Length: 305
Image (cartoon, rainbow, N blue to C red):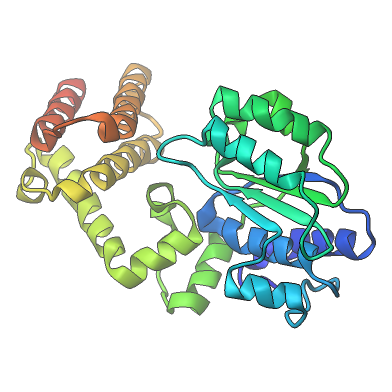
């Protein structure tokens, strides 16, 4: 089954539907890529196209499976964002392709990654295909933010519910994947998901996040921006914002008797930090030092440091 244990139940459910010929025509997977969304979709699509699927997935040996392994199955269509959007021409082309007869004589499967990035016109163009998909058509929509999808899209898809693993489950998985012993899950909101965290531990990013956390705790405590934050690499500015957000939130959790007004002000500051983080990609020039000094000044003012 999947190398992500939390995907096993939903995978088996979908494989059983394929074997029992009760498969629907459109599914919505609301799961971040870091939790194994791509692995699940790949195995689901391969099983749907397989000539001899089982309750454990595709056979791996038929012509269809070999074509998928080679990356050139003619009846498997992939759509991803072109820049920051999935555009209407991409969806129109997909819908036109899905009207053709399957070249391998089985299903036609379309995968739309980050489907919440469809603009209004693209989403409207997909509606007709969702309503009248044609025989043997399967659409799989993945979204890290399914709430951002148009209701007219999500209501026409069967929702695949995947209970997210607990931090204990993630730590156990990480022990098997990267032999880490300590609890590293504190930074999941920064990196994304367990696979992203495993990658961060392997490539050294996690150690950078640990240092950023130490730097922010020191700076907030002393009232002065530490040297590392004053000379931060531009590539780390986004991570620094996310780590500051976590440090501020953690301060609230660890101070249960905190004044209500102060707590509200710290929440407001943490919200500003994340809002700015989301806007970083739109900033032509990032004055990280100015941003960090502003956050620290506001924090000092709030706490009377």
